[in-house]
Image 1 (tube, one colour):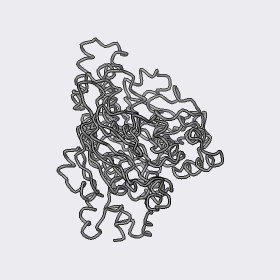
Image 2 (cartoon, rainbow, N blue to C red):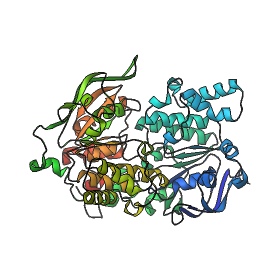
Image 3 (cartoon, helix red, strand yellow):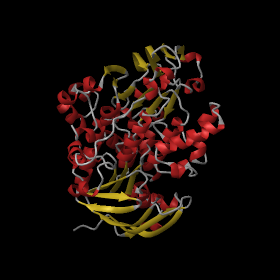
Image 4 (tube, rainbow, N blue to C red):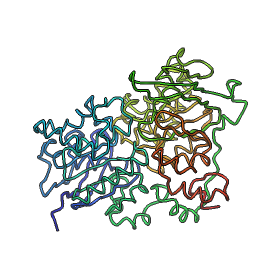
Length: 541
């Protein structure tokens, strides 16, 4: 048998600014051509393990480390990062932290230029990587104007151009539409079949099953709880913590108590809490927009957001979903048409004025987080909105409880895992108590348990009169939305109830959406149930 490309021996690490070990006594080998899936709750140590393997620990992240990492039989502790990166390529959870170049071509070429390769070879490798990922059309684009999913692919192209022997992927599907996620996974399978060793950290376990990972590692509280064949995973994990196929959840949940019915948006249902008479909260009137003069991004968007709406916005990467939402919150102003918030044109309102009505959670938490502690981060918005001091205290505590971060109140937000940072950014908006909550990819980097819990809590919070979330997770729309918008090529191609919009499988495919096992099960049982339900509830029908 060929030498193991990667050997981790009794590895432990504790961050300098955090109590307790992030990972403890981890040992495993990764083999040539193997895909090792690493799963576990947000904050369990998956990303820390990746940082230790690629050398960022202890070079960039300081703390106490014991044990060792061997790459092709050599201890990497004395290697420079540049030396490790030629053998071990990494795609980070948040592409915003990885992209440095202003143009896609420059970004993908960056690592190769640092290696001092000839210009002709650099161009050849860049073009090969872009073609391999089917994103050659992005070659001359500005990285700033790319969607989150496009940035993820560009970051991966930059790594593949370096031709590493070991590939570390930290939540590579988080920002990708389902069809792009399938394409990326197929690419990962192809790379492994050609001999590359792949460590794949991913919460979307069900999606990864398609490419038959060779083994799975399940982590909990910084330790390895299971390492073995994929078919043994469901026996050792709680179905409420790791997202398994819907049929598996139904089979296991039928022996547990049925989940309680949610009282969705109680403020919207209670007329005594209404702040104004009109039912329409936000209105788009023939809205068009372009970042560059000759390239229109949004074309003639017409819709209303009404009290009581829980809206899922679905569509392919680069379709204009985030651009559409940024018009609702006033960060962007239409080139033609208009957006009305509470009946007033957003061109006449400041972003701060709109924030009292619409609270926005960015796709990337690094665009939001700046304060020295989690508590200060959450108190910032309510303080700016002039909430009373004792009310702010309660708002912060309530928001932290909803996102399951009460024990992180004094931690620096940027020292947390990506999934925890995402929850802090959501909590910061929850604390502001805006009337409409707008979230861009709220479940990116989240384990199943946490995202189900905080979505359940958010939908039952008093104060919100409508919720809108952009997502690539079809199941999020199935479980929580009462209205689905499909956006493709900057146009609104569908707007209706989930049961109506998501049953058109041809249209879903055209919008690069892939039916999940939960959607398929709900469509099958729809004549019996009359509505979409989570798998745990279907188990009791």
